[in-house]
Image 1 (spheres, rainbow, N blue to C red):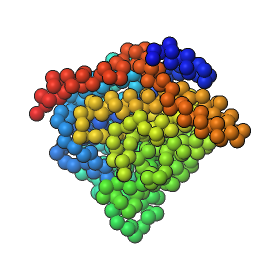
Image 2 (image 1 turned 90 degrees about the vertical axis):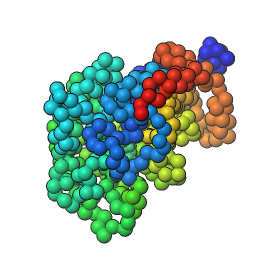
Image 3 (image 1 turned 180 degrees about the vertical axis):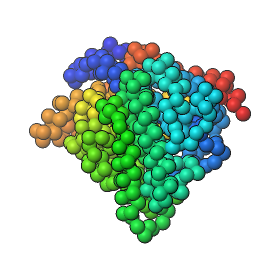
Image 4 (image 1 turned 90 degrees about the horizontal axis):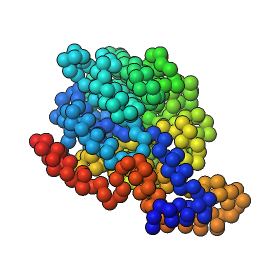
Length: 420
Ligand code: RNT
Ligand code: ZN
């Protein structure tokens, strides 16, 4: 079926497919830089394991090892991803060179250590988001912002403040708001003797970080919760209740971030989005795919991803209320393919949501017509969505499904396989 025919079919259910495509073109989705190199970054020994309870599994060849390789891989991914993309950086991706005086520790990071990324973003018209890196570092004792050790806590607070300054630099240079996400893996493997102390210290540490001046319209600090991590099974300092309460008590200076890998397996973020939007003017998301735990598998076009994006769309999330970012890391497959697959699926789920007659379905709900609601919702699943998606890709100047994987194969052969 062609786009013209698909458009007619959608028109019958009151949907303007071209309007959906146009709307999606303006929605920024922030692509995490860390899929390209298994969250290693450039500021610490790459042979040391990841810490903070997160893990990449797999040993697929071709991992980016330098800023140049990572940038080349991001460029390759961008060629295959339709829509408006932002780039999400972590502080451990600072670039040290002769021009900026070489390596400094995380508490001493400055905007100049990220100038190559700003240049990269400017050349490609991308916005930048940012994350302090509170893991995989000798100063994790193993706690960071929640540590009872004053010296440790001070180091990480200074890191957080440095990151606020770097986020302001991104926003100013690019004229695009920068979300800055605070997540730590602080917690305990086994039953703690004090659950409140670490949380009070974490709270006060975030207070100190956010006392660094910034324009809240341009720099958006987020607090991300988590239920557990590997080696941190019994207790997480930044639990859901902790971060949500923190964000609620500090609405004038930060926003809550939900990662859909960070809840108990029967909880769904799709249901939490409207709950939070009933209170918060703005929220942020890390879109991932948890398989039995917070495994950070590549995002698929699956039920929950579609449901998340339906809520984003029908709760007015596209009008600046929901900041969407990806967050996964699969080292068992081609890493550029992983980026492209996940980002295309986020875009797909958004388009699918924009092609849903939300108002009509809501009316059926509000008038107790649940039989018809079920039928209508089921019938949407076999609408000619693929033709509208292909048209979206074409209008964005990106390959349609079925035509881009050869590009991955060629890049792997010519570039990634030579990294030995
Ligand atoms: C970890 C969190 C966090 C990280 C990134 C690298 O469980 O999801 O967002 O994935 O900061
Ligand atoms: Zn996350």
